Length: 606
Picture (cartoon, one colour):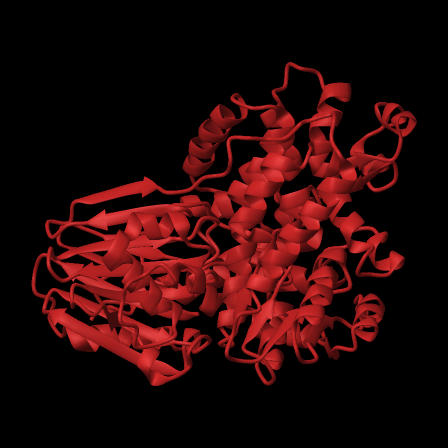
């Protein structure tokens, strides 16, 4: 895990070495173990910050160049099957790193074949020293970030937006259209960002750039076309196969030459990862949980920690810790915070860095197996309750979005351009599939990207690498193709299914049915019943209990926010209080203005 930077121009870049050094310095937290750069010409430079995980010796520092001298790479991530790929390569290796395997594979078989056959998380930039062109790629699910800027004479990329701004060649230009998008989704969907001139390379995409800055972008992977709705299946056999797939995904992510641990919230996802990790490591596992004095899940985490004899760490934070850290984390993220638990996760990462450098996390389990029961049951509710004059997309998006559209329309003074663009795009996608499939693919294509951005930033700010086994692309493909819908969200009986037709998912979810059924079923081989059978809680942050503090901050921070309608702050606060997410809604509005002031009230050019 590392941080990467680069510049590629049709004109000489003044002070190019100083600029690439500055880019490296601004993302130093991503790689404290080495800082390096390579200046190819006055038009081309690569920079790298290294967090040593595999082959920690200096021989594996980057930028790294292939034996032929043709290819130079900067790479952020891990290739979990690099030893398998290495077996088929005829190459004189000088390191045991996965970085050199990428170079060797590209040299022997080409970049496209590498992308097709690799299993990992990555943002990769390759410079072709012969043809003077760039090849770039981002992993299939978007686990690792990749940002870029392009104008008429230069292309600049980095693992973080601040890296691009650090070049001194790009001014921060506020994308106010992103405010509405963020309030609805908690982050800005690919390819956009909060910066008008800086984009994300989309997940599962490959980009090539020639020396005239002609760009070509192609998808090398997408979610499977298949979606299993079989009614006839062998549950016992599928359970065994699924257990094997999950175990394989976790075992792949135990590859490290540095200490490794797991998050352990006490929920089924992190508990299962911790259990399987404990069974497959030759040493006791460090496990971590965090909470507030008034709200935590420590008792459940302890049950798992005691069963597997882990070295367990409980971290308690209070209100002051939370708000004191908020502005700092925004400065790492280059965006407003989207999920209230980003701050506890950041604080936890600073603690776990004292013992470990790699942590396994449970992101992706809910998306894999339908864990958000109430919204994953929206097709069932739509079929049984909703007047069909409203499309399923309209019904679903009203349930999904975090700050209601009506509230955003009442108080934002800016255009909703991105809303219209994505509405049109997602409606088209929804019209091509069943509603059950739509929900799963929406969560994998859009929702999980915000969670991945969260886990990347909150770990890398403390120089910790997070790995997410439930987003192993082979496991995702297996789930879509082989696991029937009824084994993801399973009714407890046909009678209860019939009864639920007269109810809403708020009433019957996790009462009459079992979300993540097959995941819970394999969990019985590893975990206690009370861990598997407890209702989903998420990562609780008591924002509603802090409503008076949030209200006071909002009146102060949002005063003069040009993107809000004039003299509407108190009205916004009062209307927000009618929503079950009142604390989070006010918190999100505060985040926007804290972020805007931090990035756009100064010049980045030099």
